Amino acid sequence: MQNNIEIRNPATGEIDAVIPVITVDELNAAAALLKQGQGSWSKVPLQQRLDCITKFGQLILANKQELAEILTRETGKPFTQAMNEIVGAQNRIEHLQKNANRWLSEELIVNEGATHEKIVYEPLGVIANISAWNFPYNVGFNVFLYALAAGNAVLYKPSEFATGTGIQFEKYLYQAGIPEDVFKCVVGDAQVGQQLLELPLDGYFFTGSYKTGVHIASAVAHKLVPVQLELGGKDPLYIADDIVDIKKAAISAAEGAFYNNGQSCCAVERIYVSDKIYDQFVEAFIEEVASYKIGDPMRPDVFIGPLTRAAQLTVLDAQVKDALQKGAILRLGGHKLPNAGYYYAPTVLEHCSHEMELMKEETFGPLIGIQKVSSDDEAVHLMQDTAYGLTAAVFSSNRDRALTILEKMDTGTVYWNCCDRVSPNVPWSGRKNSGLGSTLSAQGIRAFVQPKAYHLRP
Ligand code: NAD
Image (tube, rainbow, N blue to C red):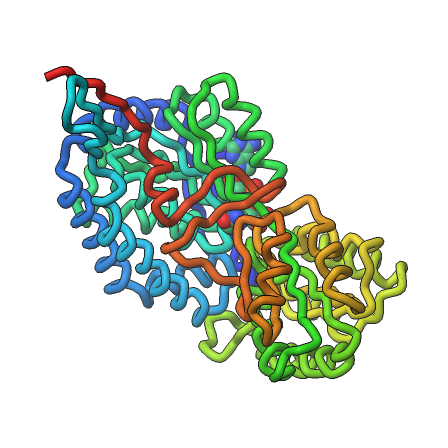
């Protein structure tokens, strides 16, 4: 059993911090404590719970400089993007403030006649939130803030690659008035995650890879408690021949593919371009990607930093090699950078096909494949040729044309003339291998409660 987590700075590969892992006894004690605390927390009036969450948001904002530095040091996320995430995630808190009351309050359905009927939304109890490292604020807030608002207690396991950030969440939640017997950050890697699966908890909310998601769902299936999975994607973008501004489309597509070094669940992972504008689009795309500033992620002008995990460098190399063997043309990058740390050159491959892993398996890095198509039907066929179902995007000047294509997508989210975007107003959900259940929106609020039906004869 590992006693410490070594946090490595991906920009240097050197150890930045050593943090003790929670022991089995400590974890059991924390679960028992939260079981007790949850009952009292659920009786705290909703507005008071929401006020704690708002205060937490204010503390996060007041300390954003230090928090962004922690996030950049442990994940390699460029500092400007770390700041964007910290500030942007506040929209979850605003969403809760505006909407939690409506979706968590009891509903009087029938208030006349012999039998009155109402629904009361009760919290699930103590839930596990097993989280990812790529957007720890966004994906964390989607779960633990919504769970706390609904009156649950939360055992939060940050990714072992975002441990420092998880510890900060705990510190500021306590400062904001969330009781210590209601939230606990449990530090550890997969082993600690596994121990969470063995505890008698009331729900499992996971963000991470398909492989781990399936393992978690299988391991806890016998408990018959809610399981929610936010998993990976292989998100397609189709550039139709009627786009007016090719350069603008190329800039937007490149940002969708390379933001956070391509390490977004909803990053654009493959691009299909109409043969009528293929060459112009590809040239504009290459020009944009070649302009990205690569380097020390602490520098505010850097757009491409190191990858978070050293092991992913090998995955990218293998996808490039496979694509080149099968006829792709390398236009940019295709190799690790000589810098210390885990840097991979932003990479663009064109003339790709679905024979290549790059167009089928999640890449999760600064690498994109482009394929030429001759019709909307061909684009639809290829976009749908995937085991994943997170998002799909179309760039076109014709709304009806775009909507006709998007209606055919078996994905939780579709985009017209935009991509790589999440909003708290609408559900965030994956289909097929991209997951189960929804966060955000009304669905994401109700995900953390269970309905109780009252049949009342006054
Ligand atoms: P991962 O599956 O390796 O790890 C996720 C979490 O699961 C970590 O906290 C890890 O410690 C824990 N874990 C690993 N093995 C476990 C086990 N046996 N039992 C219990 N817990 C275990 O994923 P990752 O590398 O952290 O995240 C990257 C993946 O997450 C990508 O596939 C990405 O697309 C996906 N993701 C999806 C969304 C979404 O909203 N759909 C958002 C962010 C990331």
